[in-house]
Image (cartoon, rainbow, N blue to C red; front, side, top):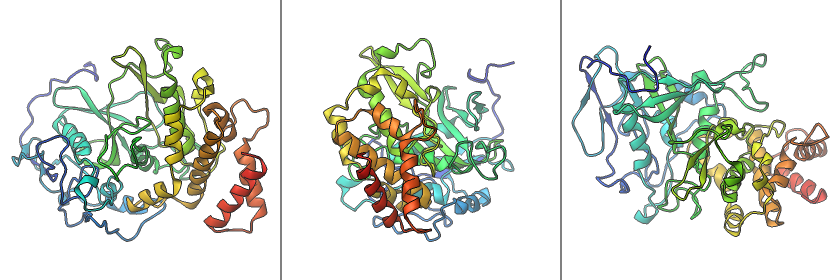
Length: 437
């Protein structure tokens, strides 16, 4: 049996037309399109069923908290797909058969979650090429069978490029893990199965570079915490067909469960960058298996956080931060990291997601707002990631609940049923002041 991780010597398939109309950003990998004010690839941009964004960024109606509009898009026929072309190359790519079309494209919803509503000033236009490159590299290797990862609860497929190397990881919505007994629930308390792919893309969208919010500056595509570039796509014509997240594969030495990693050699700031991300997003699934590491040319390991499908739950009940076991978590934030934390705004982040066509449900927004608020307040007091993590998680607690769970219980007990978001957050601040958090 062939090794699925090695290049497959597939026979040349029958030819058939296959294309997409990725709007070319130009020949340079960092050039941008004045016509499209986006920071991610726009596949299927001219499809009449796909609404493109103008520089003013009109919103498509019918936002859905549950992502039901995404599911409706998923059911559309692949016959609406446009011809795919790569960069400035207008030649059609051909392989496969006419009756078995394989297509990777952004759906209506996917495209918008990957986009930005910045102004018309060319200097404010983010790079376009990041996700176009991901999609193009994936398309080039579509004749190779994807390999399903053995680890993890949900489906994750290694997608190969033209040379046989892994280029991206596709996570289909329909293979997200479900709770054994609770309908529609995910395997973490406060999560919904079928929303993880949205969170995967949103985690990259909100991993702002240190220079400023993603979308406001022409910045490095790498965010502060190092979440790999991730967008939403829809695949047709394969066994794994469907809507899902597509993430850039990052070459690495393995996950942080490996005995080959010297924990003491990890730079403090590397641990802190993952901690900031998890504390902001109230991550319910940060274990050592979803922190990859790669050796930097300076001889020190760098951390790569992946798997963000359980961020922004509706409760603090299962927040999990395994980096709290590392001694670096007990060190204070650097001045640069503290300044980055101070610049964060949950309000701006939520608005970015709404503009990108994902209206996060109210309960999840309250957790997001509170987590960001606690991180900012505690960092301003000079607290380290470990102590902040203790507030949000049950790590090392003799009491069966975390402090933030008690805060939310007190807030709900002091308010009438169905309070407004503003009323709830006002009461949260009162409780944080009372507990001196």
